Length: 429
Image 1 (cartoon, rainbow, N blue to C red):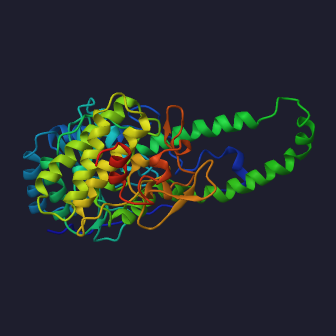
Image 2: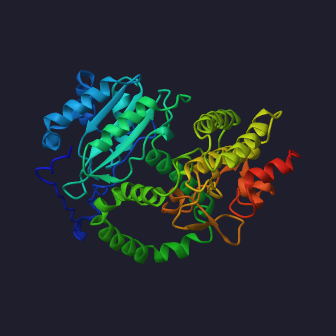
Image 3: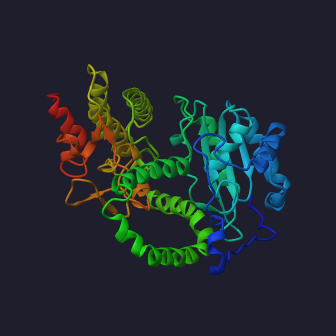
């Protein structure tokens, strides 16, 4: 089965005039998101999509009716009917200037809010910005007990609807997981980064009428002129900036294609609670236990069993430190990666900005972290971040500043097998 090419591709342009710069609104692409659901200011399309999904879990935007043939629609309908949790597919165009700024994840969360926060697995099918015979899938798991990491990889551009059907089948067979309603990453980054910037700027601003005031007044004219000139340049770039996040996701997902699913980059809190860490570790141990049962005779079984033993010992210890819980999560995921590799070798290391993200990118990207003279391996999520990566904070401090087996080995990036070293540290032989 193959998606038909779109009948037309919408195009847009933005112009700016220096003579009216002061009266210009924000560039069209600078869509303002909200920090709370529904996350978007304009809900007209969102409400229309929600109304359609109440009638049918497959919503096809009127502008995209030519994308699916009758056979494809019927096959998707059968796959949606065979689910234990609500699953909804949105075939919608996504533009940099729409209400979500072209971010499918934001759109899916907004639609879920419009449906009363019922929860479900949402899937978007989008072709905008891609060659005519290609489409891109995106998913959001909201308040249903489905492990998002068990869904098949859907980050590549695809040519036919079979990949969508495979994705829907993986939703049906996915392992149960604690329900959660994560904040869309675009919202999280925008408001967390904005708060950080405002805090930094506030700490640098001089007191009004301080010694720097009068010299500043003398140079404010040239400075404003330079600012307006820069604004004129940026106005024409607005539409491109809003689609940068979608492009960023494609880049880091492409880097992750060669990594086992268990260690691919995923979003994670940068200041997790002990409860979150404990729940996540237990979930990883359940997944590893399942994989071990299915991996009898696999060359990576011994490495995976060591990982299970090491992570289980930490999980069962009395009030383990937060950094040990993080390390145990990494070890458990590395065990699963051993069972997913052809040679049985676990993927080494973890993102040093936030080890909960996953393994370092296969593209070898690195970043400099606060307090480190050298560059450190990071995941694709952090490597493509336009600003310095957010560093995991544990017990109020940055994790990499704590001297430990975890940070000393960069979570197994250097040295011998991490699980074996953990067992030796725990005096288990």
